[in-house]
Length: 448
Image 1 (cartoon, helix red, strand yellow):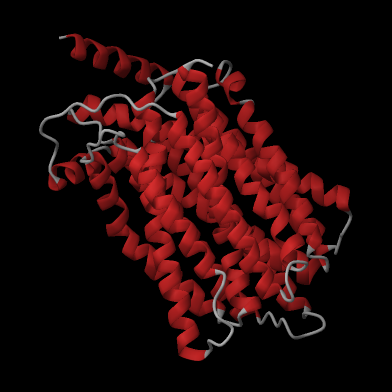
Image 2: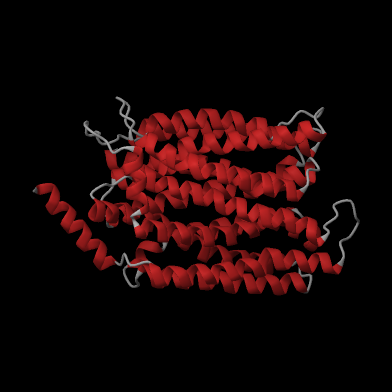
């Protein structure tokens, strides 16, 4: 097996394990804290938002640390493995809160565990994605590695989405114990997949010499207007989609009346994501990136509107719900992989404009904003659950509660998606032609 193929496979395997962890936390932490442990949804939302404010300082700082790392094992791999081991340990602890805890102790434990999870996940996530612009050149090679990475991430994200509720209710003696056992299993898989990743990738030698100061790196980042455009677009887009993810389980359990259908919804959505991501190279031959992104988000909005109708009429037909999942996630998959390509291109743009690449600092913003988007969605979802009066002890929910749930899960995300595509179309200027010009000029500078 040649080095390029080994690199691609190893990177894909790492992406699977990494996003298994992220899917478990982002998709089920609100349900676990609120429905299983009985913690207020509003408290959970505020706590997670506070963690993201902390990340506003922690994530870019981690990017700077990675940029300044010089070891015989490379710049990225030592941090990937260290962060993985610590994060897997914290993941289990977060979902294995001692049953003796209650009141203030429970809230303190939940808060500390979630903060630690975010810190340790940052340690491996930033160097992981930062390898894309470091290992590839603009164009087909970078696009292919981005597609592989995001497609495998979708596989990893789909696994907990499909299996969590099917298994936690059947593992152990209670749903609470089931979550702990499932988190343990995911943590073990996480460690194995990242080990495959770091052993299978050969980093390019890092040039020794003076590196930029922390101040210089941050100045370069914030002077990269295209990186900031992508960052804002990611926040708007992901916050909209994550709001649906946070509330989908509540929707299927209380509105549709069958939580097992959530697993089916996630399965079909995962397949749709993978298919759409795999189609990107073919689409790029015929359409520009902005056109593809606009079409992708438009398709997702159509899927949302269709799902709202199904929820309104109380439809629990598996086929019809599956169609909604397929349409929503077809667009989601395309948009997700495109944002990764856009951010990698913004690294080259930053070097062309400012003379500094700063892959890790730039990609630290992706890690931060994805978690920020998740926290915003949890805040809205958690406070929304309390606001609409969702009562897990009631035999049935009121019509007003169910309507409020649909509005939060579907209508609000549609508004966010419309804003995201409008903003991106207006502000993003790294067209295919401009990227080719940048790549040519950078190559000429290196020769000189």
